[in-house]
Length: 280
Image (tube, rainbow, N blue to C red; front, side, top):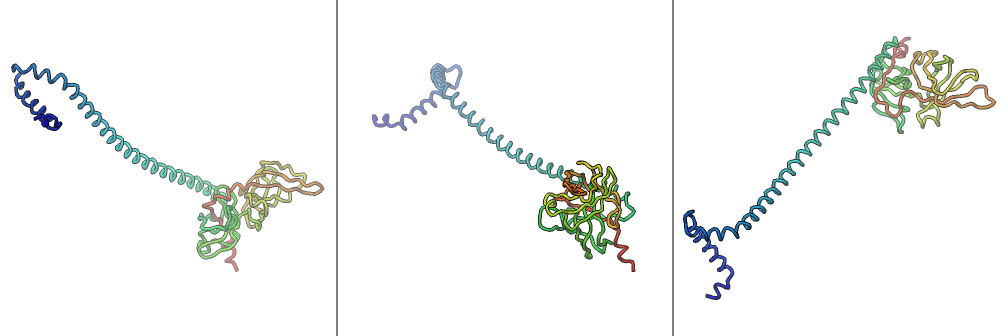
């Protein structure tokens, strides 16, 4: 018998049985054993409260992790929605920029009597500058050699070679380029050329400036219309530096083109020479 009481499992089972017996006797509120029930309830209440508190904490923790998982999922969905909205906004901004460029090109179209045909740049020679590049229109579209090429910002260059479906363009910053130009302020004639050193900076050289000409940094330069190559009045750029050489009759200036020759995408060709080449 002593061994049984020393056995912990037996003791626990005995205590549980006694509790059930007491619960049966104290089921009625009028039972005389209600005192015993109260005696047992008082010490067990804190234990019951503690167990219930632990259970509530566990439940709260489970709900917290569920809510955190839901919030994480919603956050990821919101991130995807924001990324999609940013892509759509970039697309709208790009379309707006293209629209503004087309409006400028249309204003050029009213300026010239010749046809104007828009096109895309499909390839370029190595380097960061668009010195020589290829456009997606050719003889089938009526393009001819030496047709002027412009963008919404101003003069780009001229067509140097024409194939059936494409054409090669030489820009004004290339060393093979030469443009009869005019100073917008004084109306004096000058010559704009591509320069071996300046082309690496996207700049041009303005030669044959007489010493008595009033020229300063910021002056605009445009096509003169004094040759059959470029129509009159196309903006070229502005003077950013003036180089005066002592003992020489004339001096030269450095011109920054109005066209960004690092970021060209769409251009337009003024069709002026295709019909002339067809004449006998």
